[in-house]
Image (cartoon, chains in turn orange, yellow):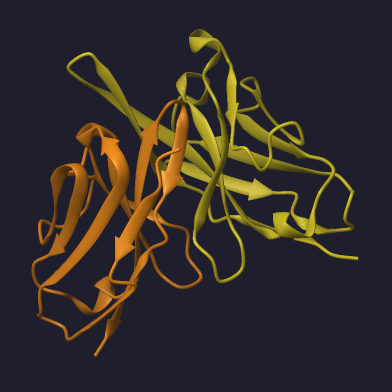
Length: 108
Length: 127
C-alpha cells in the first residue's frame, strides 16, 4: 500500500504570504491520480486539485499543484484569510484511495 | 445544485450494527461511482470503500479495516447510497462522509478523485 507523508505538519504564515505544502509518496504515484483537498473546521473537505495540477471547479488561480513520481507540491501564491485550513493530499491506485495526514496552515 | 445528504448516524454499542444513508440530487446518480470516507475525532481522512455504477459492474472495494464488516450498496431508483456497518468497534467512531467520484483518462490510465462531499453524519461506538 502506498503511504503518503505530508510536510510540514503545521505551517504558520501571514495573509499575503506564499504557502508551499509537500506530499511525498512511499512509491511512485501516477500524477493523474494525485489530488488535494481543503478542510475548514466543522466542514466537509473540498476538492482543490486533481491530476496533480488541475484546479477543481471554482478554485481560484492562486492555488496551483505540481510534481511527479513521489514528490508533489501544493502552492498558494498569496494567502487569503479564507485559506487558513487543513490540506490533505490523496492518491488512487490498485482500486484503493489513501490520504496523507494533512498540513495545517494557520495564521502567524 | 449537486448535493449529498447523509443520515443514520448515532450511538451504538460495540458489536452492534448501523446503516447509513446518503441521498443524492443534482446529478445522474446511476452513472456515478460513490465512495464513503470517514474521519475519527481530531484525526485525518480515511477511505472506507466505494461502489461502481451498475453499468460498470456495480462492484465494491473496501479498505482493509472494514472489509468483511461493512457493506456498501446503492438504490438507483431512490438516488441513495448505503453503508451497512456491523460488528462495530470503538475505533469505527468517526464522521462518515458520502462522496461522489470524479474521473477521467490520462492516456490509457484512468484517474479518480472525490469531487462532491456531503456534510457527514456522526457515528459513535461506545458502551
